[in-house]
Length: 527
Image 1 (cartoon, rainbow, N blue to C red):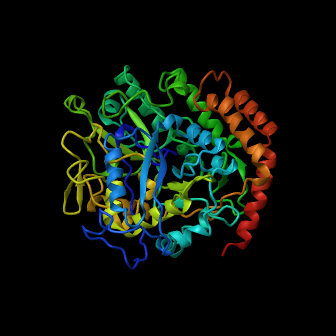
Image 2: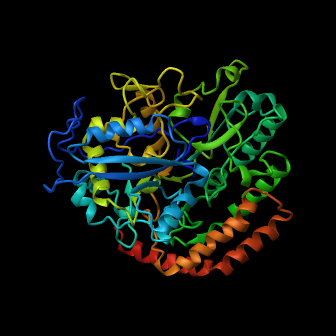
Image 3: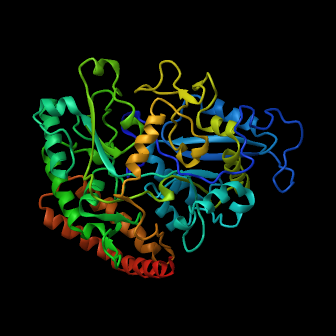
C-alpha cells in the first residue's frame, strides 16, 4: 500500500489495476468451485502421491485480524482433499517485521512462506540466503501459476543469477508518488494553490497545515529503508530509477545506465536539506526514528498529510474520516507530484511471497499458490474470508461488515500482506475498487510518463558483495537515517559528505563496480 510506501496510512487498503492475463483453462469460478469441504478420501498431489497431513506456517506484516484463525480453518476445510494442510497464520507488527523474518531465517526455523517485496526486505533476505530456489519446483507444483508468469513475462524480471526465489503477484502497478492531505486545513493555513505538484509546493502546504492546526502532525512517514515516502518525490524530481538494491539508482535518461549510490546524488542532498528544515520547524517529529511514523492517524484527524501512490482510497473514498472529524469540515485532497515526469512501473517484485530456505513443506506451499490461482472459492476465502462473517457480498461486490471499515478495524477484510496472493482474474469490486476506479486507474497508469524499467528490472546477484552490502545497510541504519529524518543535522554539506565517506569505507565502491559489471552483462543479453 506499496511504501516505497506500500502500506496505506489511515487504514486505506491498496487497490490496483489488473494486467491482462492469458486465460487459464480449468479455472473454476463458480460458487462451488472448491473441492468438497469434507474429505471423502485421501488427499493426493497433482503427481498422484498421497499427501500426509501437515501444518503450513505463513508470516505476514501488520496486526492480526480477529477472525484470522476461523477463516484459515475454513481454508483448510476447503482444501482437505487437495492439500491436506492446516494453517498457522502469523502476523508481526510492521515495525518489527524485517527483524523477525531475519531472526527466523538465520536461526534455521522451518516456517514455510512469508510476504516480501523489493521495497520491504527481499534484497537483504537474498543477501543472507533466506529464500528457497523455486526455479524447478514452481512448474512442477504450480503449473498454472507458472504459465501465467511466463505468458506475461513476470519471471525474467525477478530472477537472480537466472534463478527464481519469489512468487510475485500478477498485477500491473505504479508507485508514482502522490500526496493526500487535509485540503481544508491547508487553505485555512494560507496555501492558495489547488494542487501540490513540486517539492516547493509540498513545503508550503506542510507549513500551512502547521499554521492552521499546530496540534496535529503535518506529515508522517516511515524512515526504515533507502526509499519510502518523501524521498521518492526527489527521485521523481531528478529523474532517477531505483534499482531496489541497497540505495543504488540510475538516471532514467542515461543511455549508459551508470550505477550511482543515492547519497552521492544532488537529489539526496536536497532531500536532507528539506528534512533538516522540517525537523527544525516541527513538520516532522524529532522522535521519528523511535515512533517510526506510527504516531498519527489521518482518519482520526491527528495527521495532516501523507505521501503514497494512487489507489482506490484516493480515487473512490472522498470521506475517509471518522464521523467526529468529518463533522468538523475535514476535506481530503490529493495531488500528483511532477505529473509530466517519467516514473518506472513497479517490478513484479513489488509484492510477492517467498518460501523459506528451511521450509518444512515447500512443495505443499507451492501447491497452495497453485490452488488459489485456479479456484475462485478458495481465493475468495483467503482474500475476503467468510461471507456474512467477515464481509458482505452483493453480486461481485464486497463490502464491510456493519461497523467496520472507513477508519474502523475489520475482523479480516483488507488484511495486510495479502497482496502477494492477488490474482486479477478473481478480484472482486468494493467501495473503492469500482468499475469507475479501474477506468481511472487504467487511464492513470497507461499514460506515456509511466514507463517500463530502463534496465529491464535487473536484479543483482549479491554473492560477491554480501559483506559489503550488509555493512552498507548498517551505515544507513547508524548514520543515514539521522540525515534522512533531519535529526541533529547541523551542516547539510558536512553531514552528507561524512555519510558518503562512511559508506565508501563500508565497501560501496566495490558494490557499485560489481553491480555495474552485472548490469552491463545483463543488458548486453537483453533483447
